[in-house]
Amino acid sequence: MLALKRLMNSQQRERRRRRRLQARDGSITSTSKRDDWLLCREDGKSLLCGKRLRDSVSNLPQDIWCHIHSLMPMQDSARSACVSHAFLDSWRHHPNLILNKKTLGLEQNACGKGDMARAFTSKVDQILKNHSHTATKILKLDMFDCHDFYISCLNNWLEIAITPGIEKLVLFLPSGYQEVYTFPCSRLFGQNGSSLRYLHLNYCTFRPTVGFGFLRSLTKLYLRNVRITGGELGCLLSNSLALQRLELRYCSEIICLKIPCVLERLSCLTVSACNALQIVESNAPNLSTFNFDGDIVQRSLRQPLQVKDLYMICPNESNLLCYAITKLPYVVSNIEDLRLSSISGERVNTPMPAAKFLHLKFLEIYLDGDLSPGYDYLSLVSFLDASPALETFIFRVDQDEMLFDSISGGALQMRKMPEHKHDSLKNVKILGFCSAKSMVELTCHILENATSLECITLDTIYDAEDEDFVGRCSETSAWRSGKCSPQTSEMMLESNKALIAIEGYIVRKVPSTVKLNVRGACSRCHTPELILS
Image (cartoon, rainbow, N blue to C red; front, side, top):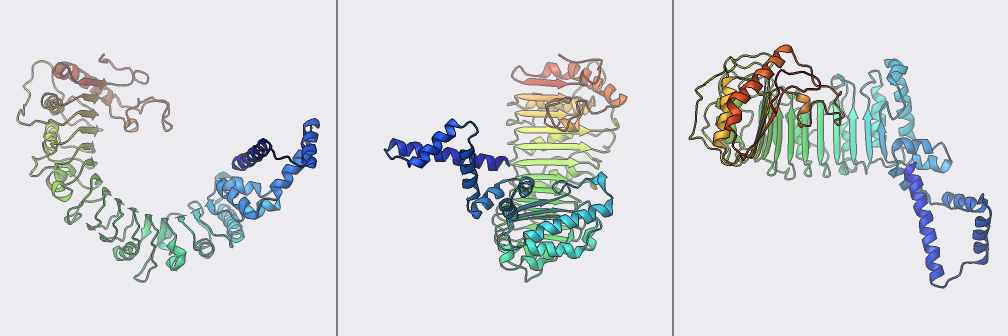
């Protein structure tokens, strides 16, 4: 409604501007119009002006009203349909349909599952039938909470909505429906699919075949919990030459993923939790970002990828860091941004590199889960040695159990590696800094051998919700509750030990040109025994 008011106000301003220009040019309005204007000024109620305004609004062409409604949010456009028949006709031409229980006014606590499904089906059926003669541009159909709807109704709705001109289609079905519902690929044949730019399917079966239509406009494809084989996906990809972004999550039937060379515009590929996947082959010449979440197998990356940004998380594989340092330099030789999440533990220390990441500038390593007792954090110097152009190093450690001996006070013989220089390194963050001897050695090594270092941050408590380093209790972040994440007494004790280690072994090694940031437990939510100034 605000958009409608703004348009009407702009039209009034434009008419006043034209009258002023006419008067300036010497043109005189008719006596009747001048009298009408005087009458409006003299009559406080401005009845005549109001009537003329209503008449001018009601006389707007239908295509203007349709355009106005297309700019309004769907709910506002639907509400305005209750005002007049003109608005009702415009609402029935609204091109953007976002249909979920919120936009339809359905509350979960107001009806049971069966009632929810019936109410949802009835409303969607009525809306789409009233839009059957309209070219829909956007259809977002979220049926995640409706477990008892009739599949035949869904096919009828897609037949109404998927017509020439549709640009965006989002379909969220209830969990488990990939076993019972097959998306009608035939609806995308010919002109129906030629305008589609965005396709997002969730919980269904999708079976494109060799004769699948030519999706020449498709730029973004998201498949989540979708039953589709690697061959069927290949049929789809080979006919989607404009594709820029591909995301596959929980697609359990894909064994071999092949990205054809015809996808010259593909820049981002995300593969997550596709448990049967064994091979990834990419011939896309401009693929720059690859996000991989899954198991490492012998041939998971068959040939070198020309990616610059790589994120890897392998929930069922230990020793991810060992794999990364020995294999990835050959697989992603042009990498510039590398993020590794090892959540199944590291059983061995990181070996020295056989090859280098010559272009790597940003490295982030996250360790979670079981580490072998006495894991040598100093072995991470291997990554610094393998990355001569590295500028930023972020190391996150989240341990539930302390599997190391804390460094003791007094003099300590530190291991030194003077031949290992890191001339490009400027910024270092260690989040979850502990009092392990090898952690202290790693920090001291960086301070002594990173000749361009500008800032180093040591945080003795790892807080996953404070990844942007804005403050654990920051209430400026929408997701924060106003309090720190809870910490066990063991974690608080270790934080105190880490602060003592920083004061005893690290502070004196910080060059005058380097800024040192140290964070302990939050004084607002915890009371640490020691806080460095």
